Amino acid sequence: MEKKSNSGLLVGILIGIIIMLVVCIGLFATGTVSFKEIKTDVENGKNNEKMGDESNNELSENEAIAILKEKYDVARKVFDLGMISYCGEYVKEENSSKIINDSLYMKSATYSSFSELSEYLEKYMTKDLLNSTPNYNDSISKSYYEEGGNLYCNTRNKGSDMNYTNYLENESLFKINQITENSITATITAMYSDVSEEEKNSKTINIIMIKSADNWLINSYEDVTKN
Image 1 (cartoon, rainbow, N blue to C red):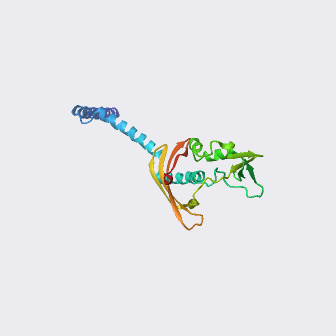
Image 2: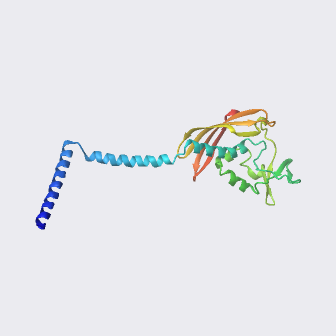
Image 3: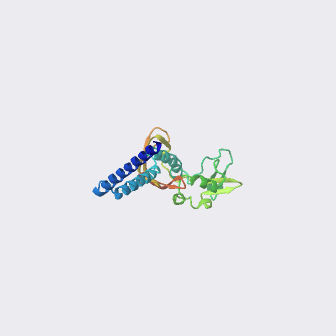
């Protein structure tokens, strides 16, 4: 009896397989299902997965604005500084300055060398942009002076507008124009107050940032207000 039961089960399985083969052959024969459609579905799945990975590499607008604010806060000190060279904070002790070639040089309290200063700025801007700024690419020869492990910076005024003395970040507008995997294009309407902090003024800055070694750097800085 057991042998007969097993034979019946085997026959049932074979009949099921035959029925499935007949159905599949019928679907392919009538064009209801084709190998091309199956292949396309697989390829579409791969493409969608690839597109998802690429989109994940792009920043959100809020993330881009946060990066823009951080980088601009340093760049503006280089481009808007009233003195001829960026130096961080100055030492406030007496006799900490030097007269060199009839120019006043103040000792930096932030940096001990020009290379240290450059290393800091290159976290925010590209070397090309830095070297395009007045009196930076000639480094030690005119704008900076090193002595005894200290950095001295030329403080000759370059004619900055006193109407743009105090930066007001909370009142400034940051607009992201375009975000790609490796670049951010933005426009800043930067608000400033004058030296009396009574009158407010704005300037428009166009900025392009590029991604370099997982860090975002300002590569183009255009003060439209001056044009």
